[in-house]
Every structure is written in C-alpha cells, then in structure tokens.
Image (cartoon, rainbow, N blue to C red; front, top):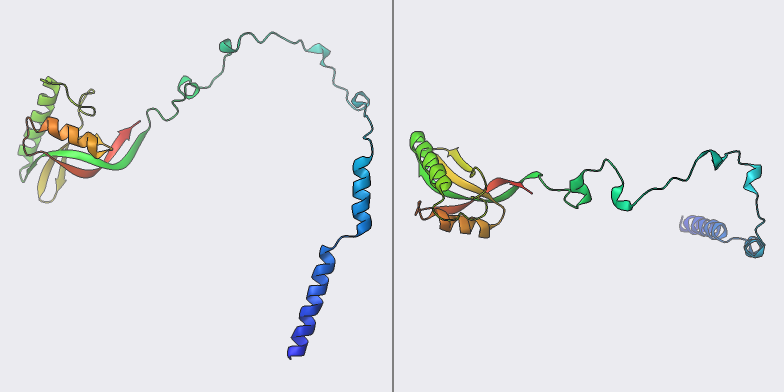
Length: 178
C-alpha cells in the first residue's frame, strides 16, 4: 500500500514540475521580440474622425469654472452638519419620582440658561440648550447637554453647579452634529 502512495506522489510531483518549467526556446523568442523595432502605424488609415469641426475654446481662468459640486465639498467640509449618535456624556441636574417636578426643573434650567448671567461653556451657549427629561423606572431625570468628551461635560457641570449644586456627569448616548 505504501509503495502505491509513493509511486502516485512521485508521478504527481513529476507532472507538477514539468508544467512549471517553460521551454528555453520560448524564452529566447521573447528576448528577441523585445529587441525588434516597433513599426510606426499611421492611424489616419483606420480613423475617420475629423476634429476640425470642433474649435479649441478658451477655458478661462481656473477660478471661474462652473460646476455642480457643493461648496462645502470644495472647501473640505464634507462631514459638516452630519448628525451622529455616539456614546458620550450629559450632566444630570435633577432626579425625582414626580414627573411634574422634573418638568418644572427642566423649565427652570431652560430659563436660567437662556438668561445667561455668565457666559455658558460650549455645548450650552449656542441656541436652544439641549435639556432632556428621561424616565428610567421609577425616576424622572433631568439631563443637560450632548458632550462627546468628558472634559466638555465637566466644564458644563461646573457651570450648571452654580444653579444646581448637586449636578453630576452621567454617560449616555448623545447626538453630535459635526
């Protein structure tokens, strides 16, 4: 049985090696073909296109080209305005069993941030501040901000602690606009 396998293996090896080896004559012909000059071909014998009907127009200065590519792409701001949900942070300012109390704190926080007695940190100063009432049984929680980094949330916590001294940072899924 072993002799049968040895013979079969030797035969396969011989076939494989003979297939991989090319003839010397073919290699010599390839080298000779590289040395031969390439004949010039007159394409007008084969081509019937007449470009004389088309004028070479002045393209004008490069800055005046008109195209339909949006300006934000041309200026390298392709990802501007894209909203992405990421694992980030918010500042929790209140927690209560009573929904009405949580809604009252939300309104109070919105009024206090809109009044802006001192400059608010980034994330709380632009437009309508993001304030959420989140229900996780059995509590209603009032959370402020959408922060991708803990440092941004810490600046907001320090600012919010002026009005809400027990404010603290919580991890949350937040929506970031780039």
